[in-house]
Length: 589
Image (tube, rainbow, N blue to C red):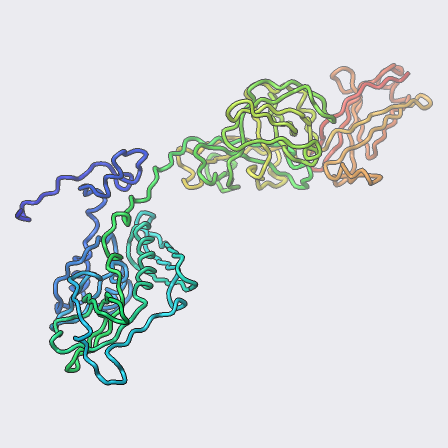
């Protein structure tokens, strides 16, 4: 035998628990920890025997036989004033042991443990002819559980309360057994425990009552006996003994195999490697991405990150301190860059000559019908080299390589963004799908054109974390920018030049059945400029889509009427000011 004083700890592992052994993708020997000799993750545990003795010592109870129980406990909570018996009961439920009095002492024994005592019917004592030698009852199926739910403390998940469940396809019952155990346990062990509860309830469905002579006084509660009852051999666990000169016993059927230790009950601790978040990629979008139907100024923000932190927080301040939370982004944007430059193309009709080449980091794209594209599906935004955004749509998405698409069947310059096509979109230009991942920012009229500092990063970290980025950006409220007028016409009348046009609307412009579409602004107002090259000769503010350039004004501006005039025309907005301009060269002949 080894002297306990000469046993030393020598198998401490420097690898951190629970990363070892839980992260088996890192540690190849993690599975060996279950059967191995490592002390890592085990030194904070206590044996069931020690815990029971400690509880009894805390209660000042000494009249017990030192228990020899199997089990390891990672933690146990006693949070109320209660008798010692009540304090021990959850442990009895979880580890299938019983406590009973014998010889003036409390004894503890694991259920199903000990030698089996064989009895014969000749040893049974008949109390009266009316009762018979024994009474055997069997519980109804509806009284027995089909499922068991156990609430416990999950030590591998921040000691949070958790519920595990097990179900068995036994009989027709729908009864559910439930218990709340204030014990720190492994989820896999609790699931096995719940299954054993169900099986034990069914195994113990038979209860026998009979009497034995005083010669069997050595029998005690929890002992296992076998006896011939109802023409079959019954294995029973004694649950109650009354000594009345003879022994009146109650016992329940038992399946001792349920209480054998099983390695499958053990499991590696649940753990995952901590996510290390690099810089968040964020982008500000000052464009009418929602059909231009907004009535209040707003801007948009999108973010992406690998791995995605769950939520990205966006803070705002007029200076580089005093940031306040403006918005949170709960989904990663499908944000990428053009693989090849995109040439200019037509607006107001399908562009079948150009294709967009992109590679996504996540998600997927699909082809749609032209009707779906016209209804708003597959909307995306492209940032041109001058910083302006073009809103467009596509009907065909061809997967040409891993996560790489060629997009065709384009609708260009949507939502009044056709002016952005005046600037090229080079390779590397920002491209983003317009979906629910785009966050609408909280803005007021006073924020228009005002520079702000923006700081953004994983919401799980504070604003000072290294993963946070800081940008300076001001929104011009392009979502309120009026569309450019169209169909500019002119006609001479007695030397006067009558110029007319058709306005467009940010709201309800596709209502073809109406004689007049909604204005979409608080008032109808236009600015018209007469140009001489790049110089502005005359500016007129007009409240209707018609302007008369009188013969007298022409002579004042030019000395004599010209054969042609260049004009620039804007619709005005109360908050935004001049919208996208329309230009035209008007011939007077």
